[in-house]
Length: 327
Image 1: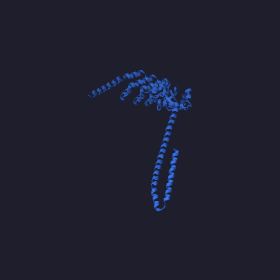
Image 2: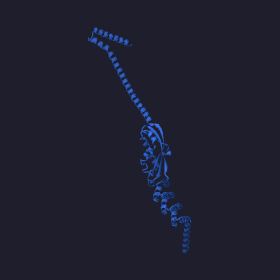
Image 3: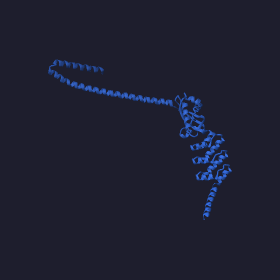
Image 4: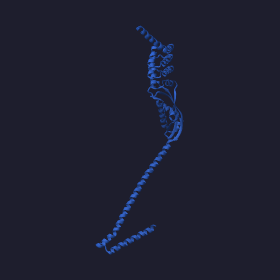
């Protein structure tokens, strides 16, 4: 009985082995014929670790046929880390054919960093042209103003080649575009007149290219070509007109403030005159009382009173004559 059970267990194990062998035989045999032999046990291990064995085998065959010796364990490790094995393999083959130094660890690091390693190798072989500014960002020209106040609208085309060594941690195309745009604005801004820029637009290219704008980026700038330069508006004249208008408003505000202060002083003086007139009226109203008191106390006589009246009459007559003469 025990022997019978043992035979059954052995039979089951044999069936399992045969099933695995038939499942992975195609991959194993294809790798064997391609010279990229992978053990059956390793294929079974890939299945257990949920690694797509077809991808590993195809990549291993592709690399072996290209003359690149690489252990399938490295491919499997990169696959488990979330990398793109096919893209990395193609990048290694392309770099090898173009005599570009690129090892698997470096390619895997670039791929895991989120960069397209295959495109980077292609860009190293065939340089890439970048429009500056990028029309996709809503800008079509780089606007700058020369020292004479004339605005210029420039377009540039930057030819770059990928720098494999700086691809991990290097800045992207956006940094290249921003730096080139800044260099163009600075160069145009330092020109004495806009005519100098229109006569020699290649001066912009030489000046900007000499600034080492590709430092810290994933690219190497090969050339900067000024595609077009157009004359814009007279920014200097507009700024002067705006400044004159601002000065005018400021002077008007100061004048209005002074007029308001003068009106306030005038109103203050008018109020003071009215107050003084009121005091005079009050004082004149007390004169008859004072005269009567002087009569009672004997300080003034009747003749003095008549002299005072005569003086007042003469004064009134002179006032009337002077008014008539003025009219």
